[in-house]
Length: 396
Image (cartoon, rainbow, N blue to C red; front, side):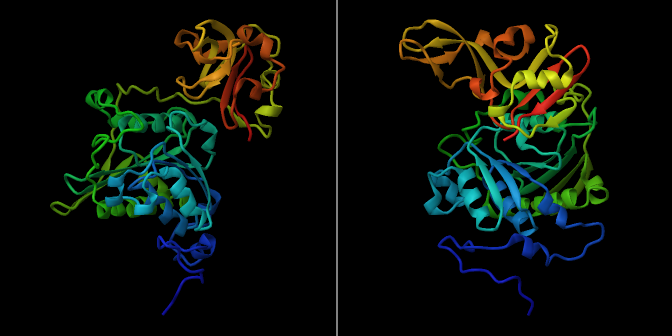
């Protein structure tokens, strides 16, 4: 009987202690138009590491994935044992648990314990596929807009336990004007019914009610769809983009449907970071002056900068309540930053936070490293001058 590559013994959770995912991928069948080696060249981004995202990532490891990013702000709850985790993992961050498991499968996995709306957009690389499996509409919206701004591809995976249904939707967001996006299928009621990223749709003390077997089915089907998108970009991927696959086990029906664009969609379909360039230098060795020089906007008061997160120009001390002039990158507006002369900490004042500023407001910071005011690696800054508009992913 044929067997896979040799591996070390299994750990207490049943996962192999070490495994060479690339060697396993070499055993995959030679299918028409499938170039399995492309899986190892891509860096998928998983938005959600729960009942679907976790087995989905593990399946892709067995299909040759070598690197990935995992974004999820939540911890496993006691109820999570029914659908997605082991007893010893309760209380741990989902992203970190999944990253540990993937490392043991030979994957360089980066865990980001963050709401997807707060992660730096440069985590999405040119050949990334964003895989969304979350239980709140707010994260769906944020993930879809992040992928659209970075002109990426996106796969949305859903389960509907009340129908024992699995749903997979695929979007190609790389065009200058995309034909449809994730929000085209959203209703006004769904926009109103957005949940906080740290909550669950079933409530803070209730399980979501998705059987583990149904989530495993969704993850397995989504892994094969993702493999076709990544490994067959010119053939099988085109059969997926703009379409939705559904499998309803109550009644045993299956369908592949064309998704319809919404002319009244809330997302602007031509919105993305223009002329995006990835810089080799990180925030400690990059200045605003360097970015301006690349666009021909150096010294021009008409230049304007757009940021991938809010930037505070004033802070208020939590102790003495005095306002203080500052410049600070804000991945999350509710976090403390900086110190007041009285020893208190500063919080952002909403009226003084901006995602766009004229160059004249930043004149004192042109020659300072971006790290001096908190710009993280993989953030994006766009510079618009009279001559050009270019966007830059800050290096690591």
